[in-house]
Image 1 (cartoon, helix red, strand yellow):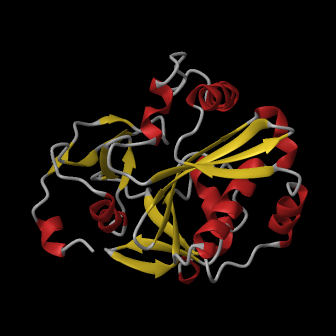
Image 2: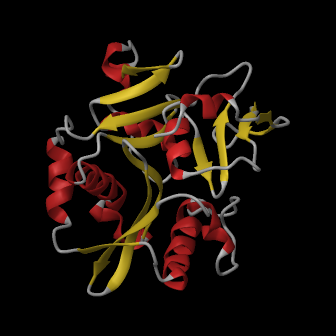
Length: 256
């Protein structure tokens, strides 16, 4: 367990304003943990409890002066009860063969990742033709990162990447074959992550940021009971007035 004093000793840097990745008419600023910090999986676990995420080796948290739309969220995996629709998706994909690995075939994953990005986010920052750079944000030199694969007839059709934390799993990214849209593989991947965390006797699945007015981030409210980090305290999502209207959000579980 990381000593809280270690967190107090961390240097944090505030980025210059940059285009927001969620609202094209806004600028964002980001709080970044000192890249020279002696980061570890244990320390990152503590930072995750404070709403930080990682991209590659970089650990960050949104810190915008006039916008607090990015709200950290996590799911209690032992209290989770799937909806009827989620149970249908689980059953629909029972024919897939699952495997978790720390050493994926990067060329195979890059090919699937690029197909997914070109179908969903063409022209974006991750639409990179190079063999490995597009996948660099998924792993880091210090994290306990695992690739979860699902295959149909020996063909990789979906993958989810998670970090192991002291109290849970942190969902990093999900990508899947765009022609398999009818399987709702993004939803299925989250359901499998929930199952895996519970099976490993962990408490939480950290889902990144819930953003109320951003369709690609608001889907997380479909998984309950959700907690959100407000005023430095984790609180039940259901207690907030926006919870009822958020329950109908459209699913898009790749962005975190």
